[in-house]
Image (cartoon, rainbow over all chains, first blue to last red; front, side, top):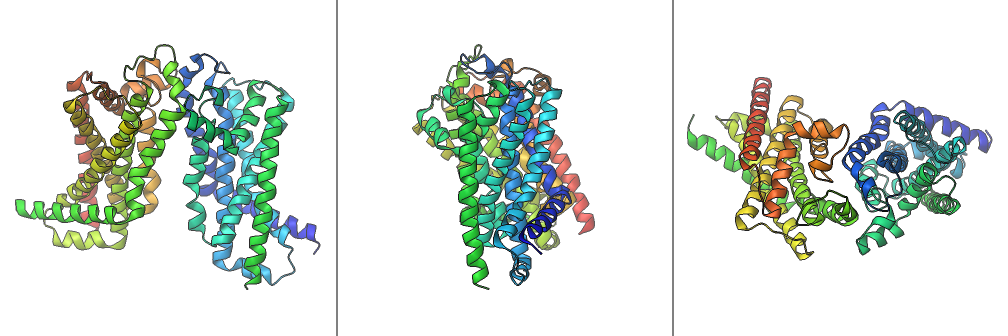
Length: 257
Length: 258
């Protein structure tokens, strides 16, 4: 079996596994929608704040749902890897000539599948409720691409956690952390409208702000090269660092067998 | 059946649960740190919402959010009572307790009392931190007592709801069923802006949502201008009565199975 075939086999396994676990997939798809619904309704009048960048809070907040789904999908993907460790599957795979990167990247495909499903769902819901994409039809592909990069970033970090701890409980335990990352970002309001200095600093240093702002720019501003460069650049950097660290952790785990 | 039996069951269960929570750092920190994080996030990150035209809460946005976060923290303490009960039902502890207790309503009241104790501590920490951070509290001591009373009411309501679910489902896997309605009930009230500024589909829902009255009541106490107290406590009494029936019928069902 060539390395590409190994990757394809593991990708297929991760995708099928994701689609066959509705109990895990549905919360990842629906929870961001529920939060979006209550926040968009509760903060609808925030569009009246001088300097608010959009006429509709739903148009502003929708971007957060893409990133939140990527976070939940990433956690699920890491938890699946941890289950493989707990069940001993990873040890058995270590006895085969499977390439490390094929194993790791194949595992991340589950998160990408979920991010794409969520992306299409949120795009459709946005259109249904009259949310326009300022970047036009071309923006749709870029929104989905940024959702995929976000999913890969969180899945890589989650895989690292799974490989370091070998515990699905520990990976699921990271869920509140993702919620904090989202809360202390520009999820609710644009950074320009955050009055409190320490909060503004946190949101500015929080990479999640830039992932959200990348998607948001396509909805509100059109083609904002700076927002897109920051979104894709930071996302890709997290993916690269996450995969490199996870790969080293996988090597260490397999070496101890 | 004697009053002593009810009282001793209540005190035993309450003491055990309170001690379990307060001596386990994982359980003790959650109800204290959770509201602090939300307070920092909402009062800090959303303070610009206080500049929305028509926002007229005199004590400022931090105090406006404090009342909501206080009730949110208390509600989640209550919801975790049901989770603790489900765990005890699964482990068989409740079955043994039911054999020993003649008046099993004491079990319900014991779990609720433990939750109320935790709520008192969590609310006090939150209030202390909020005041240290410069929150403007315009209410007097009586208003502060009113604020605490509403936190205790919503904690008891959350506990009764989640325990009713726990008695019926008897598994910790019912946690989403315990927590999701509480989460929705809370955020379908005026969480971020006053009721008058709510727009769209949420407005009619918030109008009939009983939690709205409790949130507005708590904000009235924080600002030192409590209004519609009769309505607020009437809604609280009605809510607790309905949820008490829900829990006690769940208890009867669990008794039949045990």
